[in-house]
Amino acid sequence: MPELSEPHRIAARALLDDLRARIDEASAGDEALRFQLKRYIAKRLEFDERGTPTHRRRLKAQKREAQRGLCASCEEDLPPRGAELHRARAILGYTVENTSLLCPRCHANAEALAKPLIPPAQ
Image (cartoon, rainbow, N blue to C red):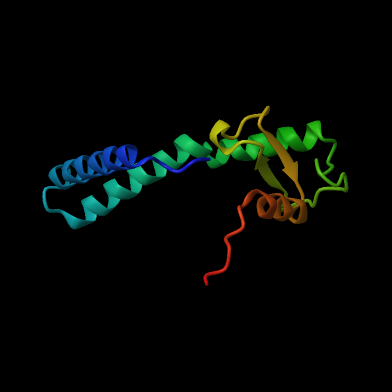
């Protein structure tokens, strides 16, 4: 996925600045409330991207059944615990159509292949 352009980055920083000011206003100097508001908002933004843990657990169970308990990559038996959802395209989220259930080894390999290599510093 491409990085944000500089104009988009500036717009994102402005949104963050506005949100931080609104959190400060809403917490009215109460540091504990400020902390809780920031945590709540951060977690909800994460859910927007990844879905809730309950949603992902249900999706895992659905994928395990659809894949007959086999890793979608190596087709070996999935471990009873620790199988991992892999998104074909991260931006499309955790959906039935965009995910497969992989054993930890295959998921690690898929993640490693997806990351661009960074050339060593000279």
